[in-house]
Image 1: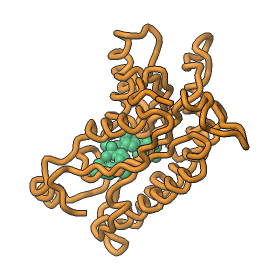
Image 2: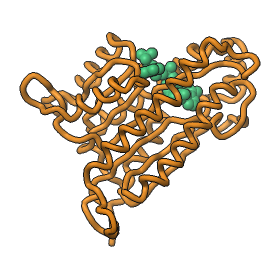
Image 3: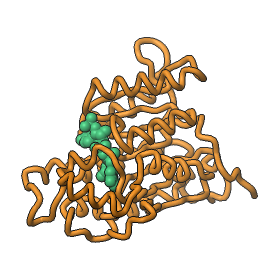
Image 4: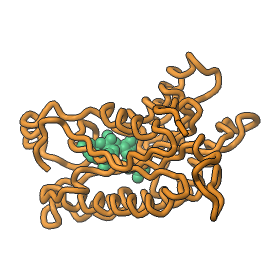
Length: 283
Ligand SMILES: NC(=O)c1ccc[n+]([C@@H]2O[C@H](COP(=O)([O-])OP(=O)(O)OC[C@H]3O[C@@H](n4cnc5c(N)ncnc54)[C@H](OP(=O)(O)O)[C@@H]3O)[C@@H](O)[C@H]2O)c1
């Protein structure tokens, strides 16, 4: 049996969280450029609307109906997560302007860093970070798994050697981090959230991979984005680090990695991809 070696993404319906900036924005740009209908999320409503309008305009050259829907709000809240799926799945006509199709690609990207260790980081920011990077991601993983398992199922007890699932790749992609694999004392509270996320990703992969849904982890090292300012990195120290290991990654470099993972045929799973600037030796 043969399968296409690289699938076009044009028929897919995606959700990307944390899409107002940095990596999430680059992933959304890439998916929309490849023809995916995409729901984007972040908390800054106005900025998100502007991003959606810009991406939609770019894609409108090829499609007369909206390809990008903004749903603003905190991605750690269950009602916001539910609204992401409702936005995509509601019909294209009438009061709503959804895509009228099930979501088959969920990119769990919203997150934030925090400079420092258990001893030195600002404890007033711990709860928000754990809530966003871990609990929010877990809530979205849970909802995404439930939704993606609901269509093109491999019936219990039946062979997966053939069936509709092979023509319908379904993906949950998590943006982890190299500090979720390598212990770094310089950002250990942040790294702790990503270590936990990596273990959830692998556990869910074992759980739903056999049912045809891929759970993939992308582990970027240093990417130049809004991340450094939010995390509170000292610009001078970090600037010197960037010069020593640079050029560092750009968000578009991570977006290409996501494209590579999700464009594989349904029976191929690139489950874990670590992407570093070539000259970054540590961590
Ligand atoms: N940059 C790096 O070096 C690096 C390396 C490895 C992994 N990562 C991971 O990559 C992901 C994206 O980070 P980035 O580098 O692109 O940083 P960024 O430029 O600061 O972007 C973070 C995005 O997440 C959104 N966001 C934050 N909290 C949110 C929440 N509770 N609900 C919804 N959206 C939220 C932000 O938008 P709003 O403020 O509008 O909500 C923004 O769009 C994070 O998970 C980060 O841990 C980054």
